[in-house]
Image 1 (cartoon, helix red, strand yellow):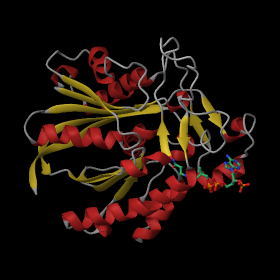
Image 2: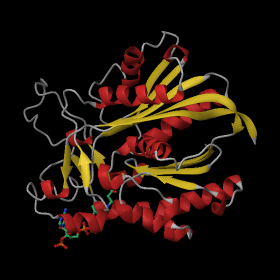
Image 3: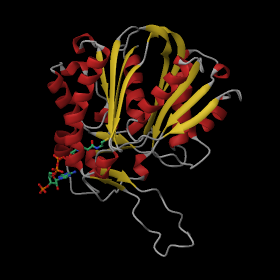
Image 4: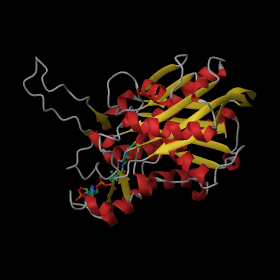
Length: 327
Ligand SMILES: CC(C)(COP(=O)(O)OP(=O)(O)OC[C@H]1O[C@@H](n2cnc3c(N)ncnc32)[C@H](O)[C@@H]1OP(=O)(O)O)[C@@H](O)C(=O)NCCC(=O)NCCS
């Protein structure tokens, strides 16, 4: 169905310069490059220094590139939504930090969303809702994370997986195919992947402040959840919106683990070449992974106007979402 929708007209991403390879990790915990590569496909990840590079500053860098790529004046932006589970400030929002840094006007709606790894898809769908209802004409959608703050660097089961970074897209109201979505969640199943918020060190009513605020992840349960629900979700999306998976140019999946992506391709009976990956050099960057992958594909020429794309992500919640768009 053709109508006013949000077309992606600009993309940007940013990764901090410091990297941590599998060999570096093998000096910190009992692991090795062969094990990590075989089980995850990840070879290296970027780590923010927490000074120059934080979730908010990385969001600004990715957003600036997206605005430049779109060739727009930031003063024309009327909505900024940022997704992050690891903001450096409780408030103001990352979106407001970006508004200020880009020199946008005050006629901009700004807020953040938190939906763990599918956060960027949640933000994208929110912005599409504003655009498709006529309430925004030009918007920025950002995903930015410093999960290195929340990883237990003594736990080899989780610290090997995650990395820091940001990705951003500019969406413009144009005539086109509607954004088609399915969003699913299960609070009941969320226990296998969670993270407590940091506590203030001088809370008046607590003796023991040094509570763990690290990631808790039951890796095998999360793995099983992903390889079961993601292919099912994509099949349901195709059935709901009446399209053939064979007509899709690329399946842009959350970059968590190459084995999850390979299993999804196999279950859908689609060639793995239609499932691009960046995770080898970035690890799992949570809500940044999909826009950063899109930006890489645009830069190397794989992404072309008019392509039919399926986005799918999954993560803490548990939450799993998918979209069908025409780029
Ligand atoms: C974390 C993950 C890579 C572990 O792989 P796995 O094949 O499930 O491995 P298991 O946890 O079953 O552990 C197998 C063995 O390897 C060991 N092991 C775990 N991490 C290891 C590491 N980094 N290096 C070496 N050995 C490791 C385990 O201790 C276990 O040893 P044991 O058999 O002696 O008990 C995998 O479960 C996974 O990717 N899960 C999904 C996580 C995810 O994507 N989370 C984010 C979602 S948004």
